[in-house]
Amino acid sequence: MITRIGSATRTYLLLLTVISVLAYSCKKENSGPTLTSQTSSSTIAVAASENNSAAGDSIYVVQPCPRGYSRDSITESQLPAAAMAYLSSNYSGYTFNKGFVVVNGSRQTVAYVAIIYYNDKPVALLFDLTGTFLKVLEQRDKGDIDGKGWHEGGRFCDRDGLQKDTVALNSLPGSILTYLATNYSTDTLLKAFENRQDSGFVVISKNDGLFATVFGANGTFVKRVAVPTPPGACVSISESALPASIVNYLAETYPNYVFEKAFAVYNGSNVLQGYMLAVNANNTRYAVRFDGSGNFVAAKAIW
Image 1: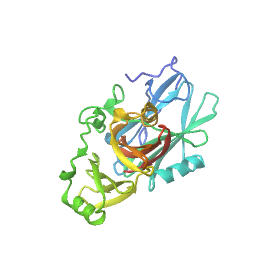
Image 2: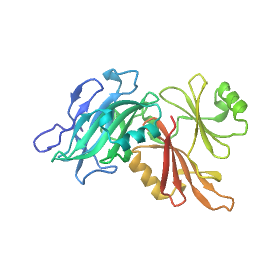
Image 3: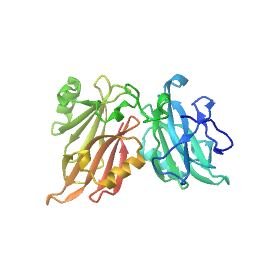
Image 4: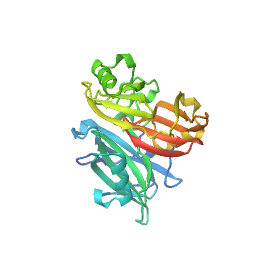
């Protein structure tokens, strides 16, 4: 339940649209890394699309809000240099939307939040005091602020784990299959997904490494991304076969992420070199690489 702010709460929580302040809200948050041991969460409302800022098309970003802390608006240039470099490197071509500095009860800066649009979809990121990336903040539809965070038919209904966005390879539009056969004839196609928001497609393939090739709704080529993968032979594995350290990292860094595909990579001597995963976080897809011990190595936004 969204709780009315009163004297016992002592936490200032802002609910903002891209246009104006709407309301104040607060609720208990128990998942994901926090800045202190006693935490509530606040929400920030943003348009679901950069090209549609109508309040009725808003989604809500869930941010851990330690007691006594507050959030002040800042410009992009007021973000730490490391945070701006991270955004440029990992979200090429992004558009800045909102920035916040998180301060404690003594008005000391403890963290930063940046909300951007990447491929016309909002992404909210939490950085520490130095601008080091901490996590991608979870998004929810307005009616799902409480509870499990999604509903059937909603924007984030892929969180049911049924992978309803998966497309059979032989069911891809003919233009996509023709393009891949013509331009990447030695690729082995592994899996394909349809983007819920723009009806485009992402095709994962293998060719001396892993690649994600993105197509628009009409089957036209958009881009090809080299997935950060250790050298070696990629073997498809199930989510249940992943080390606990990988599952824990994903849960903390991409709250309510959707598992899509995982590979274990072996060298010529059949020694495990690492893992590569494709995950969907708030309708943005990421390739995330781990070493053979399950330690995080790198991540890259695909689409």
